[in-house]
Length: 289
Image (cartoon, rainbow, N blue to C red; front, top):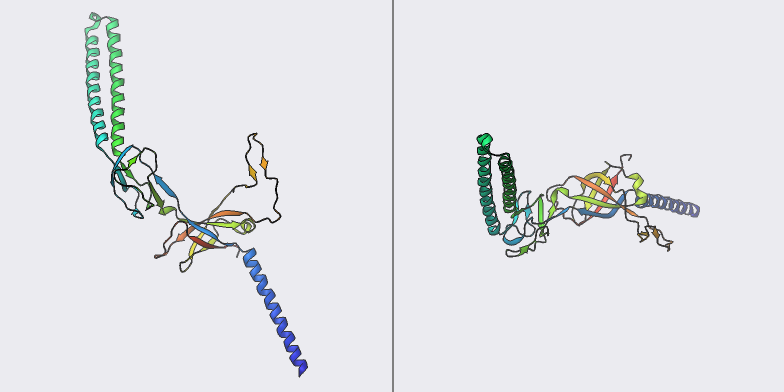
């Protein structure tokens, strides 16, 4: 009887040991070899919208976090000065056209006179007409530029998305080329997953990916869109002599480098709100599996 109990205990111990080895091997394979990572982020392109003219802001048509579509007007620069500039340019164009017409008539009259007009007079009339034509073309370009500046007083978004961190009020002075509104491009939303370098051999472009956003229910489906082709080398810096400057220290604990892998989301279910910067867990399902 005691022998049977002893054999039973030995068998139970062996079963537990085998199960522990199996589970341990499975966990080692999953955590150390399977291509998955908790180091993922929801990313999107942020477009800095800057005016193409300088002046005072007369109107702001959006609010912070508002959804906008490509072509929507975000804010308007005061148009008064640009309307006056356009009127002035149109008047200058009319004057230049009259001068050109007069020079053209003078040249045609001298040609009709034939030998009665000297060659010098004819040459002078031709040159005068050419100068008047050039002045007219210059005035036309100035008019078109003034018209363009007036159109550019309406500052529009170039992408679909949402306004973020808006800090613009009517009366603010804006300068050409200085960004004043940031728009998160909703069409560029994606997942950037940072995989350890020893897991990259099992990741290929087109592989299926499961994405879990922290704090949200369910998984999102996507696929590997691309893998980064370079990362920063922290052990190497530039030098004034154009020679490699390598850090002489060496750490005995070598951590695997992390390489960005871009995941394209195939479909985002209704109710799932993607916000740039959220944390994500990404599990790659290689095609060979």
